[in-house]
Length: 361
Image (tube, rainbow, N blue to C red; front, side):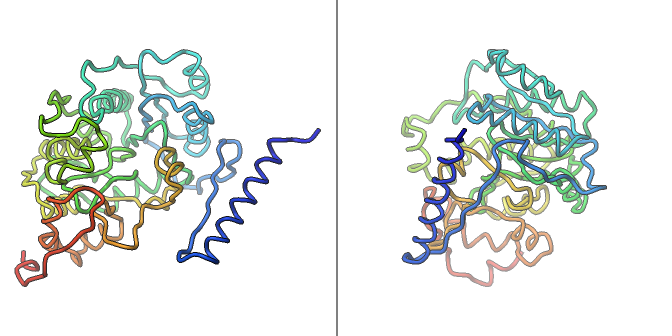
């Protein structure tokens, strides 16, 4: 019997490959095309011997992603790739058993929470409730390390957890703070030109640090009266500095943690870069083979690189972080970019002229 789905898939891939090659030959840009298996059973890679993930708990939080059984298949992949890891799904109490039972059958622990009365701007409280509940369960279960990730994201690399542990151990956190190891940003959204904007998607760290990171007070503030009502309009019309300090979930979570461990903040890019150097590290997407349904399926972009301008949504990569860590790039260099805080997201970065003062501590 002919497998029609196989035929349709093969035709679609041939057309896509032809379209990409045609665009490269006749257009002004190079392009690439990358496929990832949908099902855990399609993935044959395995971790290297000795690249252990022992002591780590993976906390997946949020509503179950049902398209292509994405959440369940991701947890099945993690059970195969990271057998030493405890797996926790932290989701809502009103989730149907029909969705939960297949995940329980994988040996995944389920943590259920009631939704907060106030979702918070950009649903920050929704995230904090499920993330906090999952991380608490991980700590209570004796976890040494925790990866907090989302139900619509996946790390395909079989050595990803061992790599993240190695990163945290290789670069000690700056002394003088109540922090055991660096927090490692794994997902998208760790931004170079937005103060304290560390990704809140997939984040890794020592269990006690992660508990402090994911348990700030829920936000009860409402949208400022002069802001647009539509969330997309808020991002497009509000200056970055104001947005980060008032409403960005990433900045609220990061700044709360930094204050909690004893850092004084001034909301400048210079101090933000210094905080990245002292408290954080960043794992580039390729090192963990990171995939995000929402981000990559709809954008069709493997990376968020922009070439026709310096975007104020530029990510803070491991390359830049390492240059900062070894002193090649200094927080003082951010002074020439402080004007970015008055621009709106997606604007081009226009640095001020470099002076001697910009290079002095």
